[in-house]
Amino acid sequence: DTGVSQNPRHKITKRGQNVTFRCDPISEHNRLYWYRQTLGQGPEFLTYFQNEAQLEKSRLLSDRFSAERPKGSFSTLEIQRTEQGDSAMYLCASTLGNTEAFFGQGTRLTVV
Amino acid sequence: DQQVKQNSPSLSVQEGRISILNCDYTNSMFDYFLWYKKYPAEGPTFLISISSIKDKNEDGRFTVFLNKSAKHLSLHIVPSQPGDSAVYFCAASPPRSNYQLIWGAGTKLIIKP
Image (cartoon, each protein chain N blue to C red):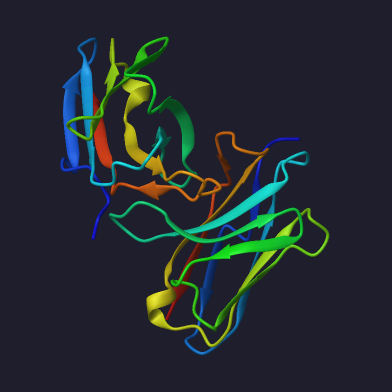
């Protein structure tokens, strides 16, 4: 296992289109987190899964955003009707319980 | 309202000298603090952490100091090496937060040869 994997690395989309990102966590990690990072800022928490259950969602996660982790392994983050303000780096992290998070390389979304 | 602040956007240090990165926080309930390092086009990488019951944690060239009364922590890197050039993020974990970290904006460290 080489760590947390995110796909795609880069995504350019037109405003109004839907996009979906995938995260494959470290295999034995039961917790998975999505963060969003914009230029010059630290990551902001979006949502958190323990196994397949989505336990926390930030108010940053509007109705256009949905995340799933159907079998408690990989996770997807979908953004519907993208807006230019959605342009950011989307980071996924995983942990085994309350341990330090391991991050993927992120998916950079550009909405034009 | 920024609960975790890194007031220096960038810091330049000569190779071999000590790098000191600072972080301030406002919430006295934070009980766990972490430093992450981030290279361009990569995700953050965990560096070192400290629990609020300690005031110092050391790992090789990296030492984190926590001053709870001042709500301040610092990361010391000594000696600084060119490979240390990166953006350093301070993050805090509220109690019972299930690791929903609150992050500072980062400090870009540049190590000059």
